Image (cartoon, rainbow, N blue to C red; front, side, top):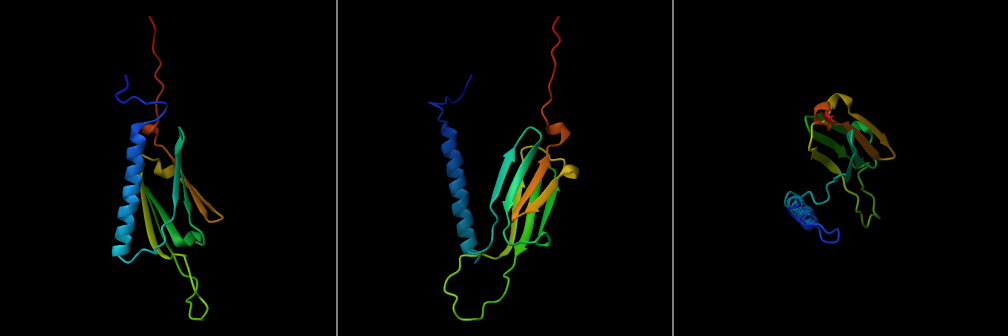
Length: 148
């Protein structure tokens, strides 16, 4: 029995998720401005899930692997790092820049525990991909039913 009926594939909770995302973006932007961090670098993330693992991709253009660190504990991942300005601009001629620099920290909490000892990460062309296998106790178990 459904508590909330989907109408023509439309789920009313989708609107609430969109609202939550928009509110988070507004509050994060206002906090960054208050702290003087409106031009601070924040990598964009993408998280996918399959039966065995979560796969997180982060855009880290221009960084070397020494510029960031990954920590996994329980069901939480923390990605920290810093994007440094390559050189101080003292010459004339710079009119406009949208590039951002600075320290960053992104934290992601997963619904189930991650097998921290099996986490693998690769970094290619400015994209960090982290494979976070689900802990064995978090994977769904198939139960066979005995028929008499």
